[in-house]
Picture (cartoon, rainbow, N blue to C red):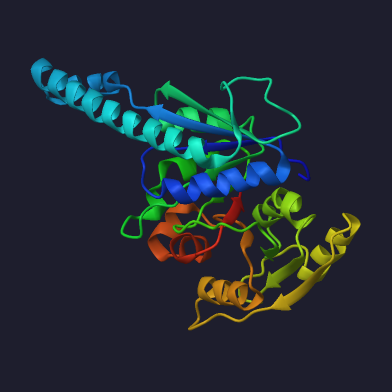
Length: 291
C-alpha cells in the first residue's frame, strides 16, 4: 500500500485521545487523506439476553438504563473532545460520507449504535488503515477491543498511537522482520510511510526469525519500490526479544515501527507473553501491526 486515502480512528472514550487526534491529523495532512473518527455507542438492549441468566425483568431494565446513561455520557465526552480538537486542527471538517475531498486533508465524526467488536472491523475493511488510541499505562492493553477487532476481523493494518502526543512527522521507519505472513502483511502496510521516509531500517534477530524470507531479501524487495533500506541484526535484552527490538528502534531513532502481530495464537501470547504483547505495552512510538 503506497497511497492512503482514508484513515479510520475509532474512539471509545477520551483516554489518550489527544495523542491519537494529533497523529491522525498529521497522517491525514501527509497523505491528503480523510480522517474518519468513529464512536460506537453501546446499545443497552444487548443486555436483554441476561434475562435468561437468572435476572428478573426489573433487574435487566435497570442494567439497560444504567448502560444507556453511561453510554450517553461517554458519547457526549467523545463528541466534545472531537469538536475541541477540530477547532484547532487546521483541516476541514466534512460530513461522514463519500465523496471526501481528494486534494486536501479532511476529517469527519460519526456516531453508530452497536457493538464495537462488530462495527469497527466493518468500517475498517474499507479503510486503508485504522488508527487505535493507546490505553492508559495502568490498563491491560491486550484487552483492547477495537485493536483486536481490527487485527483479527478487518483484513487491514492497525496503527497503535503512542500514549504521548507526537507532533513531528514520521521520518525514520523501522521494520521488524521474522519471515512470517504477518510480517509480510505489515511490510506491505508500511510502504506508504517507507516510500517518503528519510531512512528505513530492517531489524531482524535469530531468536525472532521463523521459516521464510530473510531480512536481506526484504531490503532487496524494498529496493524494487525505490526504497533504500539498511539491515541490522539485534539481540534480545535479558533474553527478551521484544525489549531488544524496542532498544534497536531507539538506537535507530525510529519514529514508526512496523511488525506482524500474533504469529502465535493470541491466547498463547496472553499467557506466556511474547514480542507482540511487549511492544504493545512498552512502545513509545507509533506501531503499525498486521496479521
